[in-house]
Amino acid sequence: MNDYFDALETRSPDEREVQQFAHLREQLRHAKENIPAYSDLLQGVDPESIADRSALAKLPVTRKSEMAQAQAKIPPLGGYTDLHGKTLPRVFASPGAIFEPQANTEDFWRTARALHAAGCREGDLVYNTFSYHFTPAGFMLESGAHALGCTVFPAGIGQTELQVRAMGHLRPKFYVGTPSFLKILLTKAKEMQIDVSSLSLGLVSGEALPEPLRLELSENGVEVLQAYATADVGLIGFESESRQGLLLDEEILLEIVHPGTGDPVEPGQVGEVLVTPLRPGYPLIRFATGDLSATLEGVSPCGRTNLRIKGWMGRADQNTKVRGMFVHPSQVAAVVAR
Image 1 (cartoon, helix red, strand yellow):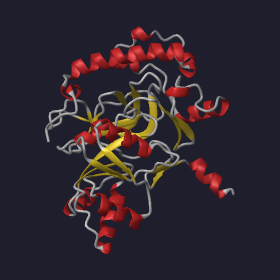
Image 2 (cartoon, rainbow, N blue to C red):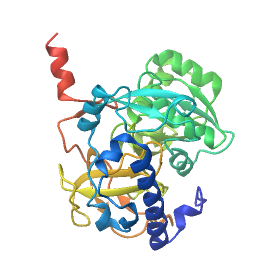
Image 3 (cartoon, rainbow, N blue to C red):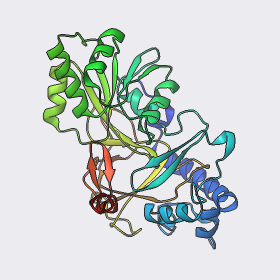
Image 4 (cartoon, rainbow, N blue to C red):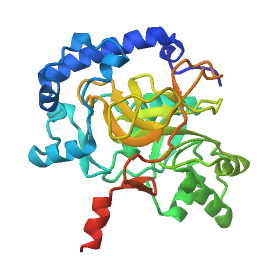
């Protein structure tokens, strides 16, 4: 499946670095001039001086806790975006008690690249089981599928028997959702004696994909690759057919730092994932995801030349994942106190 999404995936690492930092400087100028939160955070920073990773590492880290405080003072989005009106079609609730915008642009979360790597192509019917309620997960993958020219069935979560009946009727080729829910659907289809063999490929996310589960899904006729994305920054990494780590998206800058700091770790060392998506309207400069990962050496056998990471390796904070959603300790405490 060695056809690439675009030429960005095979550019030289040096070319990628030069082009990405040029975009970053433009983004910093825009943020400093137009986005209130960053007008304050970037005081004294000359965007033209940010030419390499050592300079990037000196910029302030954007933390979700600080965004939550800012949103409480300046609703709805705390001054972290200049999107409004026609440029802001939707606002979502994000795990960790903050709200997120969606810009009125094609594939805002950049998931088309991961879908393409997993085999999704123009004309495919995509069966999307991510939630369309409150959080952006369903829309994140739908927008990527639409960018590829696909038709999407917005199945959402739950209602297993209805889902299997819909799948049997629609005959989709491509699945999107968590791997555990795909297993549930395939098991239920066997119980109901409904043929869902049209389903042959999938992109899974929202939880870990253990190799035994991947093998079980394959034995049931569905080959899946995984993606790593967040509601805040969109696509971070994705598997290719080589299945050797997660390739970084071409429109982000990623750093691995000592948890709770902005200080980079040594290559290959486990640390917290910081991401700067290269999108001017909602830049999130050096956004601390709270996730742990580490970089991999060398180039992927698939021919894509971007950096690879080992994937999701746990949390650097106290959040935990329940059915693909992060739950913060403060949210648990609020429920217990009722």
